[in-house]
Length: 146
Image (cartoon, rainbow, N blue to C red; front, side, top):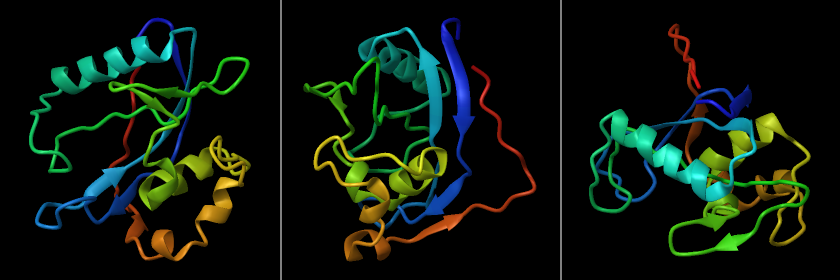
């Protein structure tokens, strides 16, 4: 994608599904991008990628082929939005180990834009520690071509 540069990608993590348990486990990762695009433009691009790769819309929190989310965004300052289509920081960011762990892998010093608490401290909460998250070990490498 012209105007978008991949700066870093986390490891892949295998997790129990979020939401209904009667579906396959998820693979999760976080990437850090550099772009001059605004968050709405980037979200529209992510939705286009999902569609191009065959994502079908199902009931909320059900199995999906691909789910691309914007977690946080920054220009000179952190961008905070609370709109129907886009919430930044992502509303589930501080509640889900499968988001926190790969995000902190890329930037261990991140601080919550909501509470001001270092995000790594959230990993100590029982609600986060109980979540099933494992480093995905595979001989297949993954690559994101942007």
